[in-house]
Length: 180
Image (cartoon, rainbow, N blue to C red):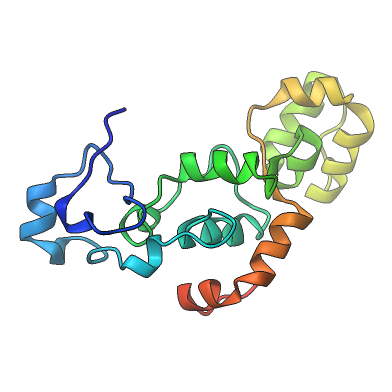
């Protein structure tokens, strides 16, 4: 993938990610059409651990326990923080701040229809509330069967990741009012 740079960011410690499909002329000449202005230098300056604020905000978001391999990531990660979320997830994983959960760890995010489909494939009853269906899936499908049943996986934060969030609460506070 071609790396896109912009002269506006020439003095920045880290060059922000700019999607190669971004219309730079439109971005420069009609900034009101974009959700955020230029990225502030402080929002792309690495902290001691080599992360930039956008990585920490993404780590915080993963801490809500609902980010998966199929989650759509908002454009603000690019426009406000200058990060590519795919690259950031890879970095957070490599540094041990998050990990890709197993199928069993992801089950709670699946809707009842998906869970019922797994039970039907084994000839098991599909009635009951979601919690009942979920328990039936856990009891009756082996870890191998679960892994083969659906591709989606949840990202989970590690204790090291939590320590990063505790170390940089100011970054999260600046991001917005929501708290973990």
